[in-house]
Length: 113
Image (cartoon, rainbow, N blue to C red; front, side, top):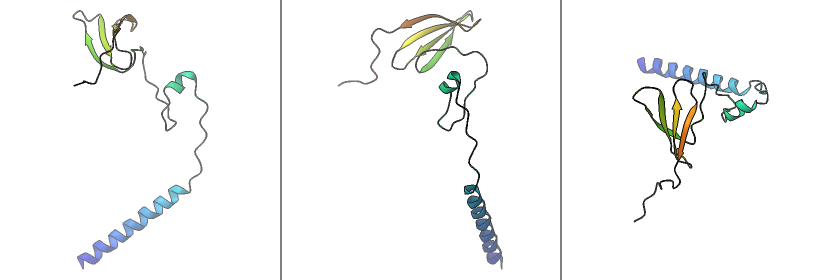
């Protein structure tokens, strides 16, 4: 008796899930998004959604991975570990980049034996 009830509930759940999936395919097409502004184009995801971060943004180079706050708290030193490797000194007061030290010979990420 309990087995039949469980089987019936499973069949109903499968039918409801199937109906929901079929009705999702009959939706009207999504409204066309307006063309992005230059700022939005840089922050547009492949899904078409835009990322809009809050606050001021400071460019830090390619692949900023690390940061260290100076002892006095006035500056933040970040590393750019991408194709062009560098250290960036950023003011914590206004967010401006004060200095950039580029590596003339980027460190190789592979070891040769």
